Length: 320
Image (cartoon, rainbow, N blue to C red; front, side, top):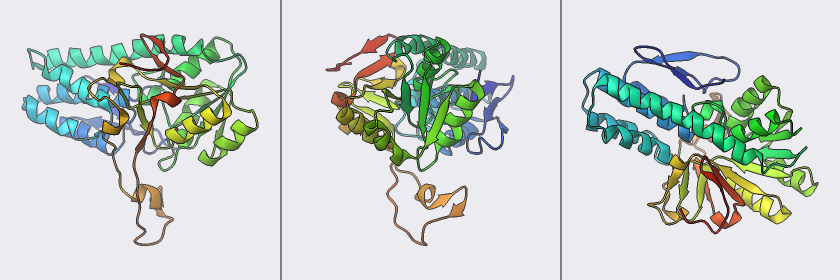
């Protein structure tokens, strides 16, 4: 199973997703500050995987005798949008003990729970995908973004394993190309039939009747079903609605944030303009080019046909 990290006895070993798929390198993270850096710099990404990493970061803080509140503060500041990050940190902060063995056990429990949720979610979601469907997805929502299997990609994996004969269109997902670099990497390893596409190809595929199902992950879901996910997801939802194609979100229940009434309240991370003006360190934009680079957008709940969690499949109007 493809996994983004492994506890290695006295440190966290993490697959560097910034350099996939051309190189597979594992980094040894020995401190909670190392883990915070890995989240901030997107060595690890994907809301569930970020939560698992943060829990192990807290374990490393406990191992070193660090202050629990300070470690939680630094880790929580690493990425603002993924609610799983705060959910995992809060679980550790709420523990009566901050002894290393206890915190490590909690981190391992969070990892195991996420994998189990993905497996259940995959079964719920696969039932929605028609036989022989062309399924379109965005970003990376597979084993690399979770504790294993995946959310939206986990649903796709399960449908394929059930013999549904599906084919996948994987959007490249600019500007960091997680779809092209990571989802294509995972689909290739699994032998699932797919084509990578430029983000702008989705509309013409839908108009031509070549897409029967669209599925994405989520970094945070508000109480009314409004969903923050990788930038470009909202566009796909609008296109799917126009063409009468089901649009689904797959995410564990830890991604639900019932404290936020609507998606307007979800904090949206804005990242460095160099992610747009440079590709693999090579400058492609003019010097001094002004850039607006939000990492996420919010899809209104009314555009979402299904929200799939380990607890089942929900349809609108949503109230979490």
